[in-house]
Length: 416
Image (cartoon, rainbow, N blue to C red; front, side, top):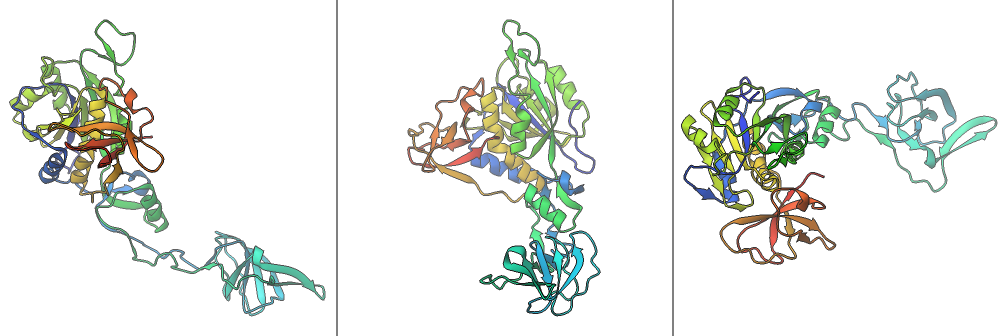
C-alpha cells in the first residue's frame, strides 16, 4: 500500500525518517523551516464529519449554536419548583423528572417536586434546592417553606442562559478538541465542517530493522514504528497502519507509486547520505520540488520536506528514534496547520535551569523534566538510537544557539 491524495484533496503527505542523501545541502533553522512549510503548502479540501470523529481536525467554518442552551427553563438542583413567594401549601403529587413530560401547571402558593435537569412546569417562578427548604405539616397538610437563614436564590437554569441560538462557539481555524466537540453536541450540531484529521501510512525502512522474531547479527529491533502513532497523535495525525521496507531504490519507487486513501505517509529511514539511503536521489530522479532540504537541529538535521510530482507532500525524518521524534514534533504541527488552515496554538515556553551556553549554529533538542518552582531541567545528552532518555520527560526543549542557564525556551509536549 501507499498513500495517495484523497478524492478532491489533490495532495497527500509522505512522512519519511532518514539517515543520509546526495543532494546539495541547504540548511535552515526551525522557525524558517516552519515558515517555508506554511508558505508552500496549500490546504486540503473540507468535508463534513460526525462530531465524535472530528477530534484532531480543524474547523473550516465557524461553529454556531443551532439552539439555545438550555432549550427551556430547567432545574439546576433537586428540589421544588414553586410559584409565588411562599410558603407553598399545595403540593402536587406528580414529580417532574428530566426527559419526561409534566402536566402540572403551578398557581401561586403551589409547588411540585422536581429533579435536576427537568423542565420547570408552567407557572414556575423559582426552583428551590432541597437544602434550602423545610417540609412540614400544618393542620395535617404538607407545607413547603424556605429554611430559616437560607439564601433567597433561584436554582433555575433559564432558557438560553449558556448561549442563544446562533451564538458563535468557535471560529474557523480552531482545533476540534474534545471540549469543542462536546460543545458542538450540546449545541445540536451532529456534524462539523472540517479539514482533517490527517491520516498517515507509517513505513519503516532498513534491512537491519526487525519487527518480530530473534535478531540476527547486525539487526536491530524496531523500537519506534509501533510507538510512532503516539507521537503522531501529538501532531493530530492519525496512523492507518505500519509497513516495513528493505533498503532498495526500486522497492521505494514502487511503494511510492501504490495507491492509498491516507493523507500522509510516514516513512522512517532512507533520507540521509549513507550508501543504503535512496530517497534523496530518487526525489531528484522524480523531479520532486524541495521545500525544506535540511534543518539545523541536533538531532534531526536530515529532516526533509518536498512536493512530489503527483502532488503529495513528503516529510523526511531521521532514522534514529530520538532524532525522528524530535524532528516530527518540531515541524509536524506546522504541516498540520498549513494543510488544515489551523490557527496556530500558543507556543509552550519554559525556563531552563541547567543549560550550558549552546555553541555552534545548530539548535539542540533535549528531553526535559519540570521541577518544583516551575523550572525545567534537561535529562542530559540525547542518545539517538533509542528513547530511554525520554523516560520521565514531559517535553522536548528547543535550544537555539546561545541558550544558557535561565533562558526561556520553546517546549514540545510529549505524549503521556
